[in-house]
Image 1: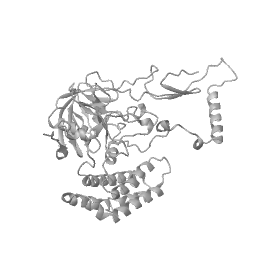
Image 2 (image 1 turned 90 degrees about the vertical axis):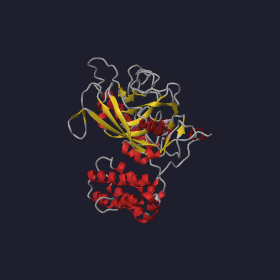
Image 3 (image 1 turned 135 degrees about the vertical axis):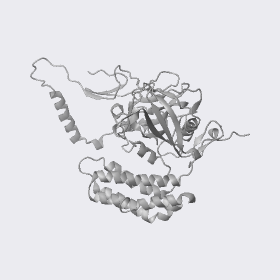
Image 4 (image 1 turned 90 degrees about the horizontal axis):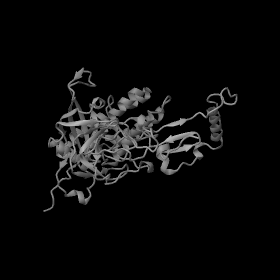
Amino acid sequence: MPHCGSARVCVGASAVSARPRNGLSLSPVSAPRISTIRSAAAGEESMHLHLQDPPRAANSPFFEPQSWKKAAIAIFAAMQVAAPFSDWNFPVANAILYSPDTKVPRTAEVALRRAIPVITPTMKAIQEPLENIFYLLRIPQRKPYGSMESDVKKALKIVMDGKDTIISSIPEEKRATGQELYNTLVDEKAGLPALLASIGEQDADKVSIRLASSLDVIAQIELLQAPALPYLLPAQYQQLPRFHRLTGRALVEMVVKKGDNTAFTVAAGQGPQPQGTIQVVLDGFSAPITAGNFADKVLKGFYNGVKLRTTEQAILSDSAQQDALPMEILPSGEFQPLYKTTLSIQDGELPVLPLSVYGAVAMAHDPSAEDLSSASQFFFYLYDRRSAGLGGLSFEEGQFAVFGYATKGRELLSQLKTGDVIESATLVSGRDRLVYPQAPS
């Protein structure tokens, strides 16, 4: 019989080990513990599925090596004929483990694009069929180009028919830029018609490149249409002066330096460099208080000269302060963020800004309470599919306030070590979106 600790679910000779959801702990006043995942059974540092060979007598004619596994497979096949998977009933609470949402964003660019609040139904109707093609491209071998063609034709028709609605939804002072973007979207050589031609050629690489380009144009139009937050903050946070809020997107540029005077290898292929630059997009649409607090600290030079500490899963700023923020997470399908609460991934709750993306930027937990975020200590999350759950989601998904992503210089993250330094952090854009509320007199 295989050993089954409390962190396991065992079926016969098979065992699936699962780590607790709240095992990752980031505290500004303690050594970084992000790489330590608690488990009831010693040595269980990752989810795994294994089969154990039963003991047998030497030279036994009844058990050839692996023969019991072959028998198990045969039995399983017979069970499938009698009761196919469609007739099996899995508990709803475990659905995320067995059949996860395959449309969870896997890159910073996709996550940020999908986090833009859609102001007009027309833009949503254009974006949805194109986003669907991303997942159709994941299908191995024979790809459904017919379905892709239908999706693009549907989106292109909406673009052509909805031109007036698209342009009129952009503030007047930005409509000239919006018109240029619209022209790009319908351009025969660079827009949706070019994407349609690539699908006709059944060239998956061209389809992927042109699809990303078209969706990027759509995202830029949506950003023009969303000049402010589409919701009000809770009353208890609106008037507190220390709760600055970011009412849109901002860009932060960090210059990092090796603490031991060694060099970085940059993606541009320029050879070893004494410094590296990491760009972070802050998303105030999904985390206005958390992103606003971070942008304010960048403006004040708070992170200049701050040292970094690294673990297997994260890079933490060594920047502790006593102030705390309410944990702020916007769940998918919700209109505004939740405060001082975490999400239950097992119950199907997923954040708009997932942690399960390499280079996600989030605030550490405040040591005083799990429902509070540190006001100063942030970390880059080094997502690794190999150490994630069966659905490809981090075991800590929905437990931290993610407020942005590293979009450029991500190759530097794996090169950072404890003792390296943020030489400077600069707010490149978005200063006009940063709001400082006034306390009532």
